[in-house]
Image (cartoon, helix red, strand yellow):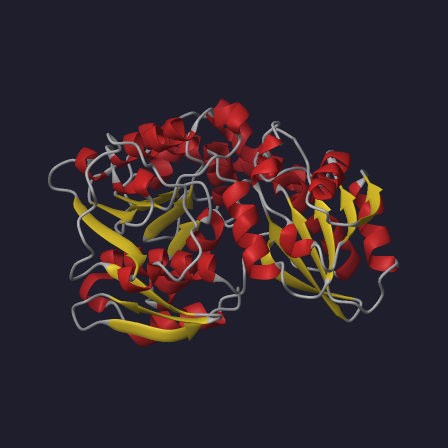
Length: 431
């Protein structure tokens, strides 16, 4: 206990210093990892409600926020990593913000978003009781290599879960994990009503090989079946007399509905017989989008949307959800390590939906690459400004009073959000 208290004191000091200097959310966790490698294990070892890991390529931050909101609506005390810093050191940094000097975490359950690779490192230290596996898509190819490598990481994570796993029925790479889940571990599914799938845009990369694996079992009683009522509302049926909705989310689009369905599926596994439909619906309706995930900011009296796009699937879904609306558009593309240094994925996205309105500005480290990519799809670009701060200033000041949208990769989104936070007095990340 003395060691834990000493570690917390050092970590909190590092966190305070990082915040004063405007540093990253993971730095204090890195300090603690180096100082006390067993810290995370000790802090999360005995939570009565277990440790829930969410992983997959897209939707982790949004789904985590939804699941936490639903559990808290049911009276659960939940520890989570709300900033989206999804490495183990990010989890520790989040913990340092809430754990008292006494060293006892005030939580029943931990709900943690984890990067696909770092989820395995986390599981080595803290075996998860539950896992929610969302999807697999090409992302950061310089880091993860091919899509099969990412799928293998999720499979290895599922093999370490002790109590229950919730899988995406409609993602073939996730569905084929089912045979690898240990005997005695409960398996639940979430997915879209098969009768409606043909009329909806595809959100997943299909695995069409003959040896792709066993076909997933049909959704059955207790599984969460999404019935979208586009454009905004949806219902979820569990097939056993429990039906949720219709619900309208603050964040629009089919992807958000799927994330909500995944969150609800895991919440019911965790809460069991105490699962309350009305509390769940209210929690989802009142939830604001996670920062940068369709978040709407009041920028000098006009709405400004921040939309995270980090791979072909995410950008395609974002354009389908937001791209048809008549607003001024900026695209900010970085190629830092957290974004993926290989931006060739931009050529797997169709930008035809932006032709009519054009793009007012491209920015970020790959601003010129983005402008060139748009040129191939006959999308007019008014200006190019690689410096994000200068680009944001120009975007805001040259188009006063107009609704605006910024599509941005992860580190571009983080920097833009900090600039907007300073300019408009927004809440800090995770608050």
